[in-house]
Amino acid sequence: MVIDLRRCIGCHTCEVACKMENRVPLGVWPAWVKQIEKGFYPNVRKSFLPILCDHCDNPSCVTVCPTKASFKRKDGIVLIDPHTCIGCGYCMMACPYAVRYMHPIQKIVQKCSFCSHRIDAGLKPACVEACATGARVFGNLLDPREEVAILRIHIPFKRSNRNTELTPIFITLVWIKMLSSLSVYPVRRSLVF
Image 1: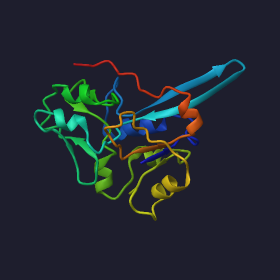
Image 2: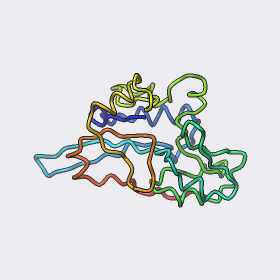
Image 3: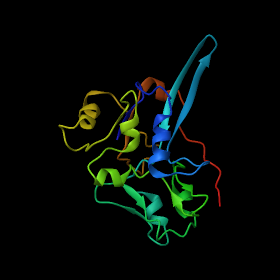
Image 4: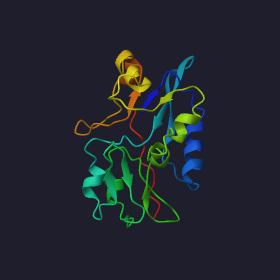
């Protein structure tokens, strides 16, 4: 997935589409859009930074899971098996991006799955389809014919990765100048047990 921050207007449609598609209860979010304000009056600039699972190449959440409920598919998507998860929260603590949450009713850990059920059916993730400005693009980064690969080649970008040991398969396109002057780390959400 590529998210072009130049197109994101902070409408939060992606958040709502994700919650509806995945039946996410109130109070928790698999993905959210962080609002960033920079500058001082009268020169204030507002930007938006979508936060979701990076689906790392070497995910620490998978390594620490005692039941192997967290796993990585062959296509690189990191998932959680709800039938195997015991809700211990180890993966939540191991995730450097604080994007996992405890389901308040089922008491199991959940996160963005890139709508893997939709991908398996040949569809795009709900957030990509719902994005009004086309800021979200999903596809195979290794296929040079796909829009996601073309964007990666022709637009300057910086990986959203904040830990050099991990390589995400999801890339956020940003204005390099803007990113260098902003703090983009998500605030760890309170744990619900």
